[in-house]
Length: 70
Image (cartoon, rainbow, N blue to C red; front, side):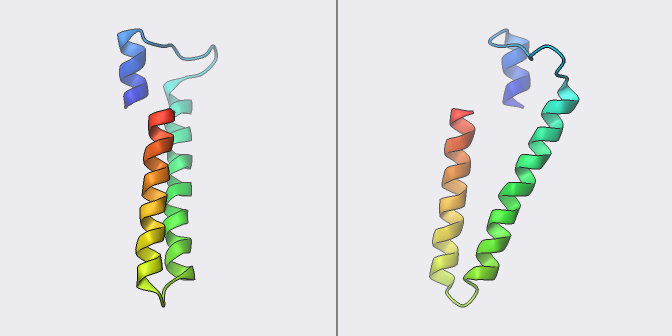
């Protein structure tokens, strides 16, 4: 969504040959990686809830930082 807004405002432009369909596909792939991180965390630390919570917070924090940098 932010990419769309940035392009419409003229802050940036899509590279030659790239369409919004490509951007959407990349977004879906990133979402799969994000949910898999949380799924693996739950499987790995299911007997230690404090580690699950810490791991999920770390995944969310890195997701936020990556989103800001991206």
